[in-house]
Image (cartoon, rainbow, N blue to C red; front, side):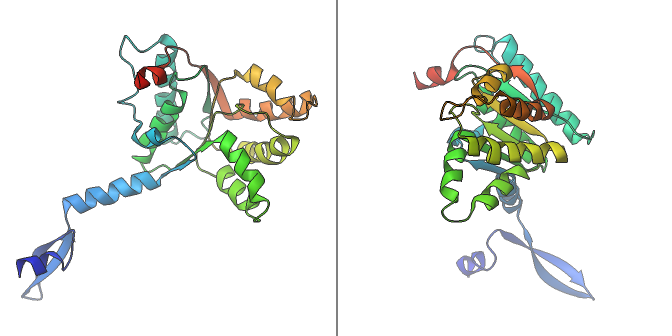
Length: 248
């Protein structure tokens, strides 16, 4: 009987209630089930598209801030992220995102993931996209007629984080019909947008001015950078390559 009872309502506990002078048994969610549901809801608020697995575990608590691993710019980046979160949750109108520029392994992507997870715990949805992989997928989406659907899903995210932008050269089509369309929509709707890149904003502008065919189009690049500068504030990040230390 005990085993049979356990399968009647898994995750629920019986509770006696008095109704119309009669005692009735109702089943209510256990604390464990509630915690599990909240965890699942929190995870579902973070849409990670082609992002590394460590994003799921990234948090402010695990962002390296020890004296031997941190740097002044890492501390400033952390302060900028927490300041954004506080202002955004306070509903202060449009709050620009951040553009993290810096070398490999200094924590740019990790900090974006930590912010997304912290916001998820407060009921806010975010979408993180590894942009070079996303760009490749956009080419493939033409064949199965899913391009508009995939692009629109990204461009309308409540909070969007484009990781590793500028890692690869973009064709004219990807730059103008994908990236610019996403940024234009987000600028018009004033949606917070984040970026990470090995390029500074100035370097990214020069990079975007040359397409995969070697054509120089500085005005196109300037148009995109105007939107990026509207959407985000640049925060340089430097320091030790923590990714190499983790592998050692």
